Amino acid sequence: MTTHEELKNEVLTLAEEVGVKPNAIHIRAMKRKWASCSSKGRLSFNEILLDEPKEVRYKIILHELLHLKYPNHSKMFKLLLDYYLQKVL
Ligand SMILES: [Zn+2]
Image (cartoon, rainbow, N blue to C red; front, side):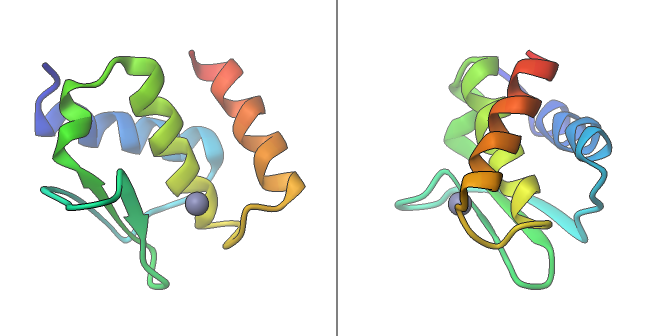
């Protein structure tokens, strides 16, 4: 199992890769979602991610980080998500 500290470090490392700076990173219990991104650039990750394999964690983390640049799920968003995922895994 991944610790809170390790997950935060993964978020920071991937943020550097994508070239964004989250204002805050929270890891907490969430009811329905894997993660969320506030309009102020605060990222929250569901703590159940700590039990998921790296591929799943990275996909969710990159998804939220890319929302700091692109607030939607456009074609460009999906292309970039695939691009970074292949680059870092
Ligand atoms: Zn999204």
